[in-house]
Image (cartoon, rainbow over all chains, first blue to last red; front, side, top):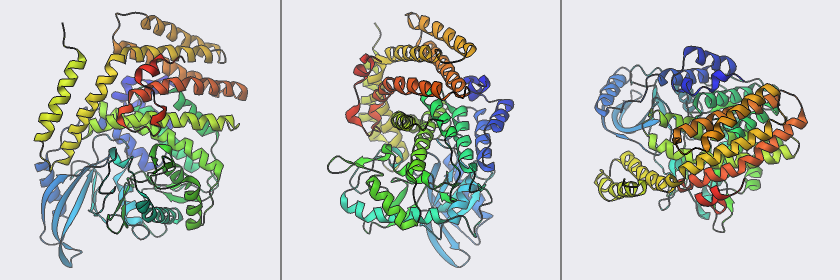
Length: 409
Length: 175
């Protein structure tokens, strides 16, 4: 074992040598490597400064002045809450849309904090929003500051979409976890959730700009190798202490990889809490949070949605996955809608992967960002880390089952 | 006599709920959300703080058991290093004049050594030893996870709350 990568001091104050050693040990997609490397370089800067709203407004005006035709006005810049990851603001913009018609539109400015519960690349996110707009409802992505040179941090601007995460009466935990729906909502939303997931998985990027993505080869383990390396690297970069169960999980995951059977776009955080709907018509108005999207194995999205950590009880206390579905009914409906089959062994593999990955965000990245005071909501990230132990407990149970079934590597 | 942690934290919670949060502009949802989380985090701390030392000692003891079990099946050099770290950690755990951060540092080193042991078993290409290592880790992880989950139960993320023990019950449970 390379003790260099287990050094707490290096995690907090990374050297170029250490960063290079991680990049070599954990090869992954180019733009993912870039995002993780930038995170480590920024870590040397220490705690993040609070965003000065007046300065941000000035930068926003300057940025838009070089991209928008004709006069425009922006006003009412306010922080937007609800997510655990990026710093978001909403503002009003009075502008001539596509050079044709003057409209007043609400916009969202989405910025990278110095460190986040997940590190991702804004160009990838922008390309995803632009690329899937024909197949699922998403906010219209307008502008991108890829480097952050103009807006102070890599950012994108998209149209605000109206809608709610949860019914008007009800509660949830951070990032929309724990939302409960009654039967009427479930009947309305469930088929839409499945239909849009099927659309996403049938999409392979054809005809759209996905230059920031690397496409794995079908019939190889390239897709899962990149994913395992991405998240293993995150864990090495962010963890405060090793967790024996996590070491075991990674070992099992690497020993049990399977070649990709069909290339799909994978949303990577598809669940209740990451779509908005109209509370009156109950139509989904937007699928959100595409920042971790990639091209690979569709089984991941099903495994993620079907995790018990995202389940809530129905009126009789039984689990509903993503607050809507019974497990078998969801899989059957998905197969019918998509035309794909789901292999139970592969789904089981991706369940272990999903739980392991969830523990990495919560007990690794979230705590590391909060501990370094590098986000705009460190107290939220610290609270969110409480999800890490349920992730680990479900991981323990899942690994106990798969190893008992003789699937150990 | 020092004001207890419990007393101080209760006064902070009251100040947040009765004075600070009501004064926050209701249009500033980000500030309101974070202020409420501050109060909720303090409420969780008040439950944890009396057990913080016990929690860390229980962790060291469990990691020591994992090392004892794993070193039966691992190559000598890796095992010897792990055992040496475990001896030092257990000595620290038996003293009263040691701070929580010092105890945590011992735990961190133990956990690093356990990861090394797991990896070294993986490299042996011996399915029987791998299965033994799996069983040790999976079995001994459960009581530790029970303690961890009990500690953060107030975050409300646990979807099996009926299986949660109180912090004290989780700490009293024999591994």
